[in-house]
Amino acid sequence: MNKFIKRCPECGSINLFFNKDKGEIICKDCGLVIEDKLIDHGKDWRDFEDSDDVSKRRTGAPMSYSQYDQGLGTAIGSTADLSRLEGKSKNKFIRLRRWQKRITTAIERNLKLALAELKRITSFLNLPESVQEEAARIYTLAVQRGLVRGRSMESVVAGALYAACRAHEIPRTLDELSEASGIDKKEIGRTYRFITRELNIRILPSNPMDYLSRFSSSLKLSPETQTKSVDLLDLAQKKELTSGRGPTGIAAAALYVAALLNGEKRTQREVADVAGVTEVTIRNRYKELLKELNLENEIKKIKGKRRKKRDLDDDI
Image 1 (tube, helix red, strand yellow):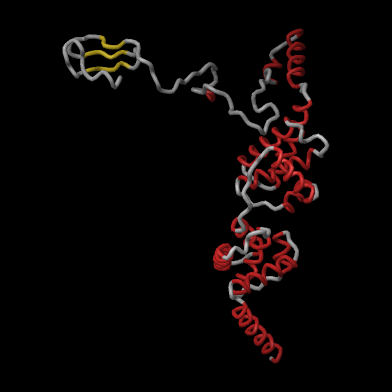
Image 2 (cartoon, rainbow, N blue to C red):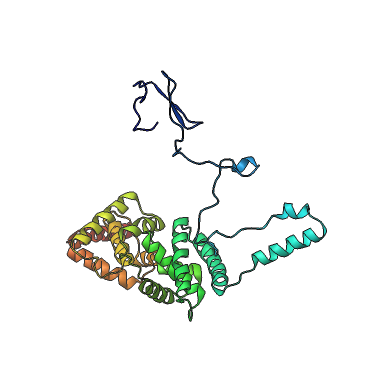
C-alpha cells in the first residue's frame, strides 16, 4: 500500500483495501477508488519457454570471464532440433551452427586456448571457482593490453593464477604452480611481477600463517604442534622477524621448532620438501627464531634428554 495514503479523501475512513492484481487502493466504506495505477516494485518473473525446468527464469547465466565470450554467446539450436529438419533447412541449420562456432578475432582464439589451460591447472590444484574467475579476468586484461605478446601463453596463465591466489589469500607456492603448469617457477615469478606492475594490481605480501595448516597436514603433525607454531609465528611477527623474509620459509621453520618442542621429530629435509624451500633456509630461519624468542636453552634441554635416552637404549 502507498505509504502516503493513510485515509480516504472522501469519507476520511482508514479502512482501505489494496488490490494487488489490479493495482488499486479502494475505500471499503464508501467504495472510492483512491489509486488505480500503482507500480509493483516486486520481482518481475517471466517465463517465455514451455519447459518446466526453466519456470520463472527471466535471465540467462551470469557473465563469466572463464569463457572466451564471457558467456554472452548464443548457441544456434541443438542436436535434437537437427533431427527434426530435412533437406535445405537441415543444410542451412548446419551451416549456421558452423559459422556460429567460428572465432574471428585473434584475442578470442587466444582466450579460448588459454582459458582451457587455466581450467586444467585450477582443477589440478583444486582451487575454488572464485580464484579461477579472478585469474581469467586478469588474463583477459593482459591479452587486451597486449601483455601476452612475446611471452608464452602458459607462463602468463600461471602468473595470472598465482596473482589470483595471492589476492584471495589462498596459499599456493610457485613450486606447486610450476608442477601443475610445467613452467619454470622463475619464469612464473617474472611473469607475475610483470602482470601486476603493468595492470597496477596491488597485492599484499603473503601471511606465513596461511601456510601452516597445509604444511602441518603434509607433515602429519598434531593439532597441538600446529597451535604452538601459530603462537611462535605470532611472537615472531611482533618482533618483526617475518619482515623481508619468505613466508613459506618462516612458516616451515616455525613448524619445525614447534615439532621439536612437542616431541614430534621431523628432519629439516622433510620440512624443506613440503615447503618447497632449501634446508639452508630452514636452518637460517630456525636459528633466528631460537635466538630472538629465547628458545635456545629449551631446545638444548630437549636434545639432551633425547641423547641420554638414546645412550640408555644403546647400553641395553
